[in-house]
Length: 287
Ligand code: ADP
Image 1 (cartoon, rainbow, N blue to C red):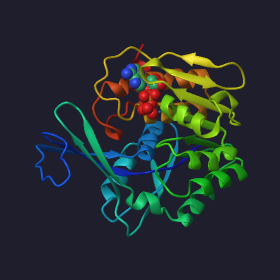
Image 2 (image 1 turned 90 degrees about the vertical axis):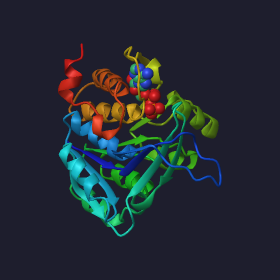
Image 3 (image 1 turned 120 degrees about the vertical axis):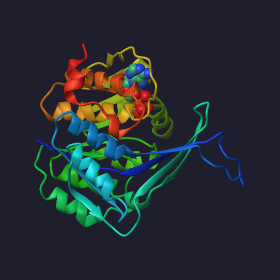
Image 4 (image 1 turned 60 degrees about the vertical axis):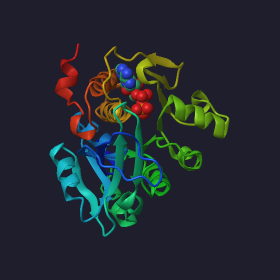
């Protein structure tokens, strides 16, 4: 089996600043770090680290070769990442000494993934494979409908949250994962709580409180592991990548969630995103 992930690829630039600049202000940063990021890339890396065969479907600009190289290094199949004329997506993240941040997200190539790239990838997909989508690219609705028609298992991570986009793909989904805030936003927008949704498996992640799974039976709760968090960025993406990789490799849901819980706990003890997602041997070594 395989995972096909239609997802964003970002260059994350993190600037340390004395304070978050006010309108009209010019400010020098004191440090800059560059990371591979984007929810899509993070999930692809997590699922590949968890030993799944992951095909990333996406786009970068002429400036994005390094990001594709890095995905390849981390074990992701990159044959369906198009290089287009539009620049690679960027997240400009300013962080002040107190940890407060301001983020500017430029979607760039993520919003212009060519339809032919999706079609070429899907021509190789097999019934029962996973098709994963999030909310940082174009073509989500097309992909979800196509995936459903082809007999793929369609998974959606509803972030960043957008009620109209969730509703557009909802009829095609087998698996939905969202955090507690997104679940609340969905409830407000549709009047539906996770257990009422017409989706086979729904997982609501609860940060340090763990996760709830709404499957065929009663809600099942999975507590988080107790750790001292240093950076929770990417915890949700790591969790999602690990759950899907586990399911793709034939694990029952409870086992996949327990493994993902360990991976996400390791992740929150590390600063950074895609570059520091733990691999399966590290996760398995955790008692
Ligand atoms: P998101 O990053 O999408 O908002 P959550 O914050 O709900 O997602 O985190 C996803 C998962 O990561 C949780 O279900 C939990 O297993 C793990 N996690 C997140 N924060 C912590 C934490 N402080 N301590 C331990 N595990 C955590």
